Image 1 (cartoon, one colour):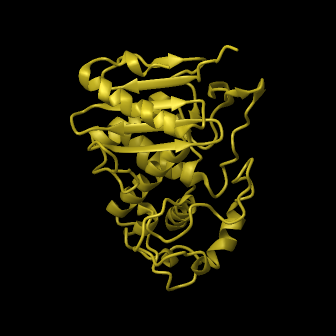
Image 2 (cartoon, rainbow, N blue to C red):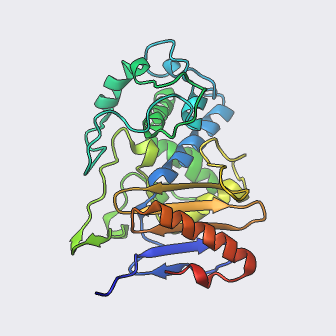
Amino acid sequence: MTLRRVPSCIIGSSHTAPIVTGNHDAAKYVEAGSFTKVITATILQQLAQQGVLTLDDPVERWLGVPAGTGITLRHLAEHTSGLPRLPPGTARLDPYKKFTGDRLNELLSSLDRLVTVPAGEHEEYSNLGYAVLGAALTAATGETYDDLVAAHVLAPLGLPRDAMNSQPPQHSRLRPTTVLGRSMKPWTMTGAILPAGGLWASPRTLSRLLTGLLLDRSIGEPSLGWQRTGPLPLIWHNGATRSASVFAGALPDGRWTVVHRLSSSYTVTDHKGLDYLRAAHSGDVAQVEE
């Protein structure tokens, strides 16, 4: 049996042209997955700089939640809110399909009962936390999440409004990979989970966001949404959905990469990103191809 290469696209600082395998395309819209969290946290930072809110606002200032949870917007952005990773009631095949705005409002009314540890005491990666954060940002501004992305991230970086959004043009959307000849339908992430992982953009746009936010620092210091752990002095974030995964990271010396694959195996995607950064240092990037 012949194994097909997983469609992938690698863009990096030492490469003028993307490394592309399979039917991937650096110009087509793809799922950004949890890279979306970087965008949400950047919006938070921009609104704080503009005085619309503060990082340490209690969540109840903007949302109808019980007072006294101790959760602030900063806690939500740093994954220290004490909220669980996933909203209650997620399904297996399309986990966020029923996680609508109405469902989030139901959960907010009893948010104190969802907290597993006191806010600020423990870091636990939380998609639910970023859904709550996104809801707070839209409540504070009265704008939609897509509007916030366009105004506070895309426009300052010189990107058009449609460069990244929740509903990509169908003609520009990369078809997902197939399993046993059947196309894998993307998860439904246009509801309350959108600020945690529902945006779409091309790998080229993801690269422009990475370099603008981390290297050029065009709109300030990197937001609280970036990850800063690992064996290298690396600022990064990854993401994975049912049919795609992404790794984006940069080093202080200017090396950077964005890797997007039509595969949910995010650990493989992460390793390819790290391999690329190491190879970029030595000038040999061919070794990271599949």
